[in-house]
Length: 274
Image 1 (cartoon, rainbow, N blue to C red):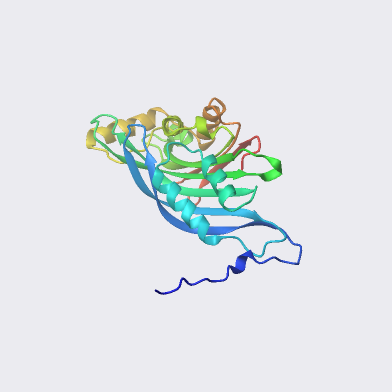
Image 2: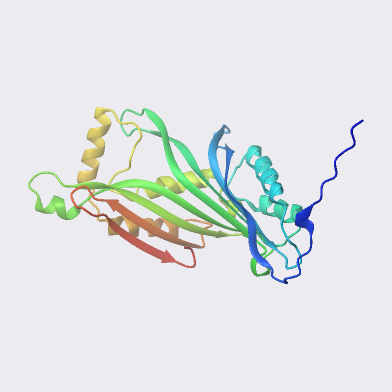
């Protein structure tokens, strides 16, 4: 019988330079992530992960392969909310550390009906979730979220000065949310409600599928509801101020201009969110 091969575990060697490292880990790790949706269905989407831990001054290296193993199992189980605290806790235990940070980026899909015909198709939204534990002696995971939502606006000035028509543009909203230790209060139904409220901040929403009767409705709605990019941003601020459990937030609104050779933007921050 062939003897089992015993290999040296080099990263377990001690280090004499007395330099602790703030964070050591892996980045750019792509995984299929299973999402447990509000209608009890499951959707698997591509995701990209970054995970790291603090390394003590006495340790030469961390266990890089354990990051992959932990993330692989977690992503396959099914995510029901934006809460990554259990992942942070497992990583801290398996890697024998108190300080952990993880982040994942993925696309969240909502099936969106057209305004008149009612025909529907998937609409995609960018989501980035970050969680950290152990920083500044905090034992619970602190969560931040970045959400990307698109809407549309029609220029009030253009409408006012023109005999016919007005120029419009697509507006990209990127909001940063600080949830603290309350991420468990942010399940996917809450995320979808926030998405709908942010989309409604524009002159009209964007739709993945429009028939002619829908196009007519959207065009006329935009014309009847003109807004500057500043208006859209302020309405988004009001939405986030009234949304629980958000304790701090930031907003960047960018209008992709249709008649100017540049874009327009607005930034706003309330609290510590970046």
